[in-house]
Length: 314
Length: 156
Image 1 (cartoon, rainbow over the protein chains, first blue to last red):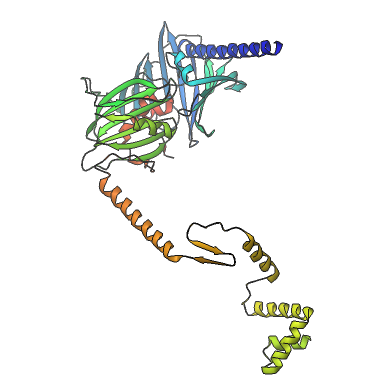
Image 2 (cartoon, rainbow over the protein chains, first blue to last red; image 1 turned 120 degrees about the horizontal axis):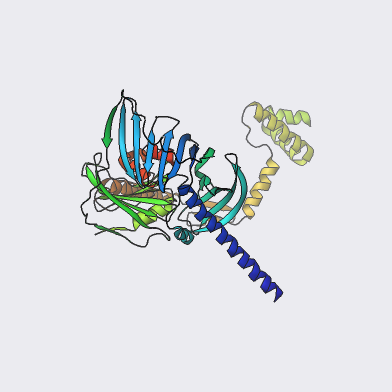
């Protein structure tokens, strides 16, 4: 009887610990939106290609302002106000302005509905580490099945802000790493920095996403998705290179994302079949009834293969 | 006796002398061992040598003989002391395999553009539309560098 009570206590203490860790995830998500901070973010992919970005985030009277500047390579700039993003793509003498929407960029990586993560991941305490000169607690989100990868998060002990994220595949290979090299928490809500550096020597042009707004008849069905995944977005637009309209359906479990592209294949074009890899993302292609089905995502290739098989064309 | 051995190895003995010499050699085990050693040296000098230890070979062959037949799938018939291989069946399987390979290759080339396909073949990532890759990254990535580069990711 005493042993049973001990086991029950142990079980309950485990549950409390898990709940505490999920609370930390919630606090981390809130911190990434509410706090004012700036720093250098280093990103590394599975090719060990390290790139650095300078960033600043300020919550000014309840509205989020964000700026990312590339340090390596092209001098590109991102200005983001709430969900509206504008990229200044610097191509030597030209600057191409691209408008984007709804980007969840590190350290703001969490979905709006955190409860959804519990359906797909278990949580564990990974211990304390030092990241960007600060003490951080590592939290490990392990997948409940083999349809997605492991996410290791290092959360600042004081502010709860994510300082580092590592995506690790099911063979324990690091797929992608994002981490602050240094970070400073700002007291001021000043947003005078929220503007591009206009150069008179360069020509500017705007490239807006021309998504097809009218209702598109969905001629496909995708049933029995991998556990935890649900459709979060849909776009359709004409791709000049394909000379066709492609439909993009995005599925997510809250952390992992999969894009399914469906487009017709012209008679003179060769359909793609098979699997490949692009940076941290896997790609799987199939060909059905004259249409190219393409799945892209930072998930195991088996997940992409499964989901493309689930695409039924009417 | 060593002179006798030397004469035999050097092919100096003929006819009855050779028969006598060999008979004497067969009766004397130490002389026989010496003969083998001399013969081995002679073979090595002439690059004819291929078996270092005949006793080891005998042991290995004996153990192989004692082992059960591993590939008794219709091609090798083990008759305790002899094993024969049915080359006709090998040839038949080889030809059938060749025909099947040609058939599959032909079918892939002729039907890949007209029917549903599903495969785990390698897909060259360069053959995927760059616009599609960019749209995927710009809508799903959490990596600010990838977002700023409008989808660029280095190939593996």
